[in-house]
Amino acid sequence: MNKQERVTFVINTLKELYPTIPIPLDHKDPYTLLIAVLLSAQCTDVRVNQITPLLFAKADNPYDMVKLTVEEIKEIIRPCGLSPLKSKGIYGLSRILIEKHNGQVPKSFEDLEELPAVGHKTASVVMSQAFGVPAFPVDTHIHRLMYRWNLTNGKNVVQTEKDAKRIFPEELWNDLHLQIIWYGREYSPARGWDIEKDIITKTIGRKSLLSKK
Image (cartoon, helix red, strand yellow):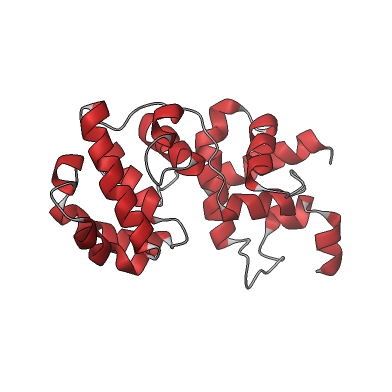
């Protein structure tokens, strides 16, 4: 297969496996999504979904969040890891949303990335999942699979994002980044990887990987 045929194979296979695409992080609006994505750094989505109901029961909007202390936030989110950093970020961004954005999550990459503890990936998830703006957030699953599928050189997530945006049609970005995450979890994990179950890598994977298998 040439590169375009491999890209088409990926798109068609993922569409077949995931015709409807569940959102990994539970949320009800852009603010709760933003907080959930921030918490998911170096933490599983399953764990985040266990913790956010406890946090959102006390504060599911920036106005209520700033009524809590950083310490109170930290205690609730402790199981997610990096709680000192994340609690300061949650409190700080909530205050900025009130002061600069009328309590609303802004709809631009620039404004989102200015918020404390919000990097490009977090902003990309919010833009795509909350506002439907085409974005291609790259997490560890996407970075791993794009390398396994020989669609990027795997140098870093910045390069992987550029490559993904270049080879996949823009109108599919928002679906594809989620489909690849689900596929990575179910069929092509980092640990306990069974190439026989991983139809995409088995069909189009990087030759150096396939020869080891």
